Structure formats: structure tokens, C-alpha cells
Image 1: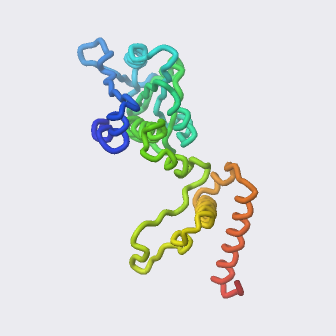
Image 2: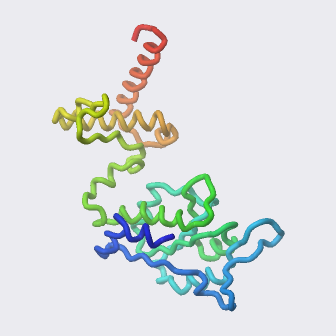
Image 3: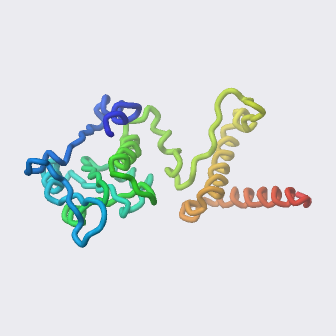
Length: 243
């Protein structure tokens, strides 16, 4: 499940450049029974299997590098993963990502290992492997030197608290759809203003929860007033009213 993504694109290049070292470990390595069992039925009954604490504790204790190591457990019960958390993780020297399976971890695992519990969304996966890859990809690209252009991460969606503005490339016309004329104008100030306005508009339309939490400048608030006036004008026009 890990080898394909780890050998492609930014994750591969980051490893090749020596910006990051990624290793995958099998919890069965730290079992002591002949069947290498890592899970068991839940106390109190119920469906599914629960990861046992012994192999997980032994694995973390073997892999830890003292105070430099931070443990992250991927679980639907965790804090929502975000760009802010990815930035924080990217500054840490050593991460140990624990992947749950089926019914997840014995609760003594995150408690006893002082793990940061993270969730990548309000849904359930069969295991934490895909979630760990999501966290890896989002985090590694923020390590200095990984991306060819450092500014690209600074303007990504969520990096500024907003969704990113729309992007266009050649051709200028495609199947009746054009490119906004401001992007062809060469006026960098006008382009910057348009991009910020479109980021605000897109966030307002698609993720108003982000807009409520975003740090906005006076200029941003002026742009939002413009957007609201334009949208109100469109609405009146749709009803046959003067816009």
C-alpha cells in the first residue's frame, strides 16, 4: 500500500534529495507468538478486531530517537488534519505514524505513547495506511527544499486560510470558454487583486466556515463588499430586476 506512492512524484524526489527519510515497518516484527498476532477481539463484545498494545509499544520504543520523536496515530476519533498541522509536523525532526486497522487501537496505545491523534476527514477507512500517506504527502512538501518553487506552497489552498484562486493556462480560448482578460493584461497589481478577490469569492461560496476563521485585512473586507454587491446584482438580474 505504501510502495507505489512513496516511489512517485514529490515524495520520491524528496527522498532522492535527502530532504526526508521514510521507512515502513510491519507491526508483526514486534510480536512473540508463532502466528504473529497484532490484534484481538474487543473486551465487552462487538464486531471487529482491535490492535493490541504490546506490539505497538515495542515498535515505537524500538524506533524512537529520544525527545526528537513525535508519535502520530491515524484514527477517525482524532483532531481534523489541516494545513496548519501539516506545517507544524514539517518542522519536527522525527515522526512515527501509527496506522490503525478495522476497529482501531486499544485506547491505551495513544494514551500511553502520548500520541497526537489525527483524522483526515469525517469518514471511515479500512485502515490508517491511506491516511498516513495523506499526512506524509501534505507534510513532506512543506519541508524546506522539497518543492522546486518554495512560493507555490505559500499560495496553496488553506495556506492563507482561504481556498486558492482559479488558475488558467494555454490556450486562451477553449470550447467557448475564455481566460479572464485581467490575467492577459500584464498588470501585476490588477492580477494580484483579481486573484485575492477570487480566493475570497470561492471561499465564501464553497467554504464559508473558513472565511469566518480567516484573518482578513481591510482590503479583503472591501473586496467582500464588492463580491456581495455583484452577487446581489446577479440575483436581481436573474429575477428580471434592474441590476
